[in-house]
Length: 209
Image 1 (cartoon, rainbow, N blue to C red):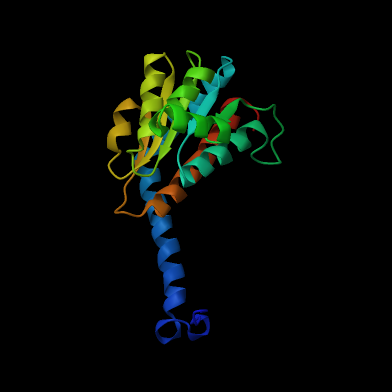
Image 2 (cartoon, rainbow, N blue to C red; image 1 turned 90 degrees about the horizontal axis):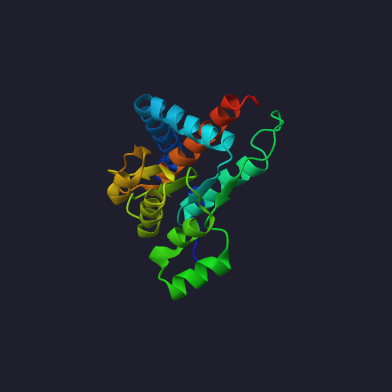
């Protein structure tokens, strides 16, 4: 049975829906401002590490789950294909580890899902490369194991995290933690914005923008 839609009612007194829009966008903006003021130096350091790695012939391996997997693919595509049409540059070597469904399902079935990203880091990563982990909780086991494995193999590690940074924090050479109280969506909004700023800085540091 179809449910009745209250769309035309406008919520409480006709303004509740608009209040949700305003409250959500303003909260997201304030959170981004807070993160920016506390971490601008770390953002620059992350971009510099990536730019230097690209200059040295290394690559970036990005991993995350769910929405963070989508962000990993998003950022990898902007590095390999294009970020802004106004910047003409060669492709930059970035791989999202969440895109190969055969590898993910075989790894999950044969090794356990916690091991899938570490296994792909073993396959693709070389000393001097970077593993970039995304986790809104800071506790995604497969992301943590990927960074832990990367460190043992001489790869550099960076992470965008949420909450208090969780168990992944200790395995990241550079990290930014977006504080939240159970609101992963707001953390993801900060993460993708941070990723965009990092890409813009990388292009400038490499002399393309």
